[in-house]
Image 1 (cartoon, rainbow, N blue to C red):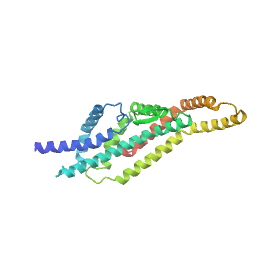
Image 2 (image 1 turned 135 degrees about the vertical axis):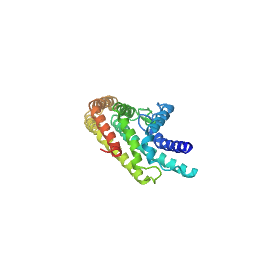
Image 3 (image 1 turned 90 degrees about the vertical axis):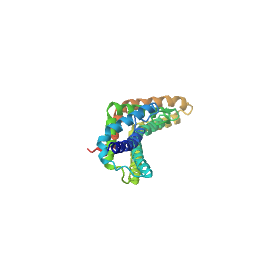
Length: 253
């Protein structure tokens, strides 16, 4: 009896860790390259161990063959990837917004290594994503992510067929919503840029000899920085509300 009990719990723990650990490796605040891999592993193991009493009643019987166990683990990893990418897309709104703002402020070529996106991105995108991750942790929004991750077991029960089509559709909709929200949040910068370009065109007609590149770019960058200073608080509040709405369907109202 003791050996059977240990076997069931060990297999169940690794099944829980397959989903929870995979999601944590992609979740904002834990997936960045500046977070040590050992720390991410420790967080994944700790959350998996703490969630086991709640999840074990939903676990299927131990598979009789190694092939069935591998299939079960792959299904759990797929669910973890889905949840992790969903969280990354929610944070990606800020990176897309930063790209738009960089384009409007003529800073699109100012690229740095973004530790959150793990790729080259604009300075403004790096700045916004860093603030976004900070606010997620400060406002305890990561607790909501963990709660939603555990609640996925009520939607995607281990051992049952996973709705891959529904996952892909939800990720596609979230990507479209992130791009649309980023474009909406960048509308003040777009209005300022279009107005400035129109006035610059009139000035160029009145003073053809004026060196526009040296004259216009510092003013354009300064204007966009001023708009960012004015709108940053509201932008971040809207982002946090959208980030929260991403996980509310998992945990309920």
